[in-house]
Length: 358
Ligand code: NAD
Image 1 (tube, rainbow, N blue to C red):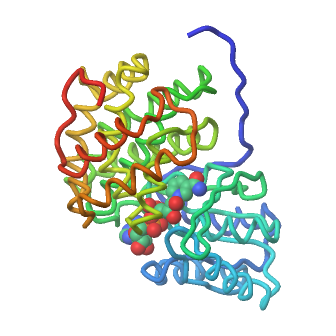
Image 2 (image 1 turned 90 degrees about the horizontal axis):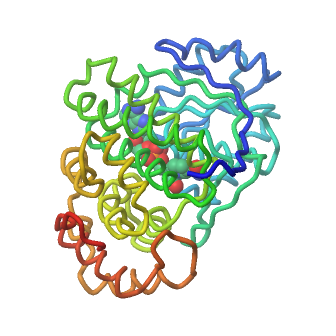
C-alpha cells in the first residue's frame, strides 16, 4: 500500500468495561443532561426502566418504541414525547434500531446522545442514519447524528440469544471486510478492520456456544466497536448496498441478511480485491476469504439461503435489477449477470467455489 491517504477521525468518547453501565449518571452529567429521554425497543423496555432507575431524576421519560429501519412515524412520536418533558438529552439502550431512533431525534433537535449498545451493529460509532418513509429507506451522513458518548458494557451483550448474536456479529464483520477494499482506506482503518475481523472471528463462535464465556463476549464487543469505526470512516460497497436493497425491498432482518450475504458478496469481489481477500482470510486463520466466511455464516446464521428468508426464485430478477439501478463504486464492476449469478448462489445457499470470481 502506498502511503498516501486522508483519514478523518470522528469525535466521541468511549468507555469500555464490564459493569460500565453504572457510569451512565456521571456521563450524562458530563454532557450537561438533566432530563433525558430514555429509548429502547419494546422487547428491551424492562432494561430501559432499569437504566431509568439508575440515573434517577435525570430520566425524564422512557420511550420503549424503537423499531428496525427507523420509521419516520416512530421518530415523530418519540420527538413529541421528548418535547412533552422538555428533554435536553438522549439515552439510547439497545441495538442499531434504538441507536437509530436516538440519531433521528438528534438530527432534528441537536440534543446530545449517550448510547449503551447491546448488539454488535456498530451504529453508535457512525455519523450515518438510515430512515424509512412510505416503505423507502434512505441514508444520510451528518455530524449531528454522531453520538457524543458511548458506554460499552460486555455484560449487556451476553443476553443476546445465539439467533441474534451470531448474525449481529457477522453484520459487524461485514463492515470490516468492506473497509479492507474501500477506496478511501488508510493504514489505521486497515489495522482496525483486520483486528476486528480477527477478534470477532475468534470470539463469536465461543460466545454463542457458551453464554458464560465473558472473555469471548468482551472480545466480540471490542471487535464490533472497531468495525463500527470502520463503517463510520470509510465508504462501503456491494455488500452493504445489496443488503440495503434486499432488506428494504423484501423487509428482511438487517443483521440476518448481512450474515447470509457476506460470503457471496465477498466471492463476487474475490478476484478484484486480492489484498483484502488475503487479509480477511488471514484474520480468520484460513486461506480463502469467501470459504472462511461461508463457514462462519453456517455456524452463526439463522438463515442459510435467500430461499430460507422466503424469497422465491423469481424475486431474484427484481433484486438484481434494483441492485444495478443506481451505479456505485465496487472493486469489481457491478454487472447484472454477475449479480444475478451471485443472488442465485445465495438463494440456493451454495458455497462459493474456492478461487472462482462469482
Ligand atoms: P435491533 O436493534 O433491531 O435488535 C434486534 C432485536 O434484538 C430487537 O428485538 C432488540 O430488542 C433485541 N436485542 C437487542 N439487544 C439485545 C440483547 N442484548 N439481548 C436480547 N435482545 C436484544 O438490531 P440491530 O441489528 O442491532 O440493528 C439493526 C438496525 O440498525 C437496522 O435498522 C440498521 O439499518 C441499523 N444500523 C445502522 C447503522 C448505522 O451506522 N447507521 C449501522 C448498523 C445498523
